[in-house]
Image (tube, rainbow, N blue to C red):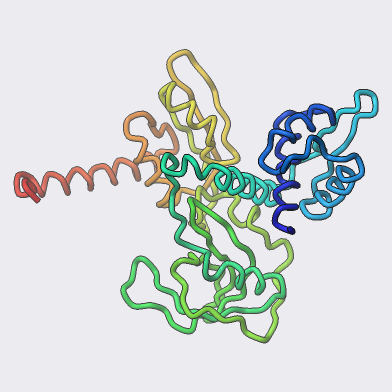
Length: 305
């Protein structure tokens, strides 16, 4: 019953948000054709009021009503990133659940991390408890055992969950992938996170999850018109700005020159050129030379491998 109610709440919020403004009559017409109506032709007025209250309590989403038109709308949504992410995930899950008849025509990407440890880490963050675990980094065959971390926050990046916190052993803030953690336990003692500790501040100068101590640099990229469309839809960084010409676009960013950013630029091939700074341009050229040398070294010996 609780799950059915949650699905109803999600459907109402998603429908009103998609339409922008909608009357109760229009909402009821859509409701009668939804998989959650179960034969109901409308949502009774009192029930709808209760649903609005529950939605505000659960999701911190307020559904307003314009008394001049009697249309409903979702009030201010600018700064509720986590709520939006959870809501979108719930909407997607609900849509997929009601699309089993075409399941063989839907291909999903597997998300390997978080299933085992996410709830535990969230509890540790909420209660300010350190955690102990073994860590299996991609770069080493031997794990680090008995790692103790004071977890500050979580971040999801490219389908993987990451925990950032202070490693007690060397007193440094580090980021750990949850899918590389084993034997995770919550410790009984407590810690106090430094003031202003949040993922937005910590990663503000980073392209991805790699953070170093260098100052952010002004990066200028020249892109083909087609590539520019992707950058507009999926910006490389919040600082991104664009200058458009008929033949190309110039994108400007302020961020650290980390290895993951260089790797991302290389993935675009000739459609993206680094204009500035010279240091970043040299890093890209150096990586390209190493790649070319590796291919040249293989030569004809690679045939048939």
